[in-house]
Image (cartoon, rainbow, N blue to C red):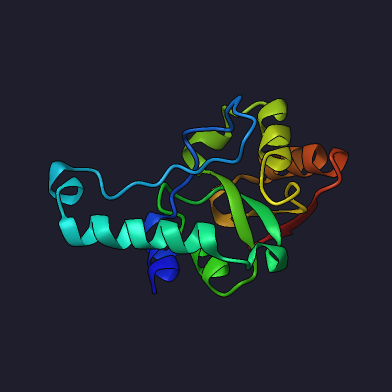
Length: 149
């Protein structure tokens, strides 16, 4: 239950990275206000989920991906992850995607665990056609398959 809760409620678009850290890292947040940060049940559920996630042996079956587009709380990518269709290492929201340089896309691919992203999922409704094509070109150059949803 903890891992599902972590995935369902903590999945947010990346705005903390990729970083220069050499070890995998995750940023996990509970809400946006003092009320959520003080919710003991939420904190305990989050702690349980983190322990379960780092103890899990399921990473081998994970298909690493990055998500491009959607909102700060990216529902389509969260649903895909909960269904086991992909494991998102980085999600760059529609609000940030226009400002992201090609090297950041390449870093997001490279630094997704385990072993780098093999797929990128673009939410069509939130990324304009010209930018989608530009992203496809960059992703193709680094050997990543693109799926549009």
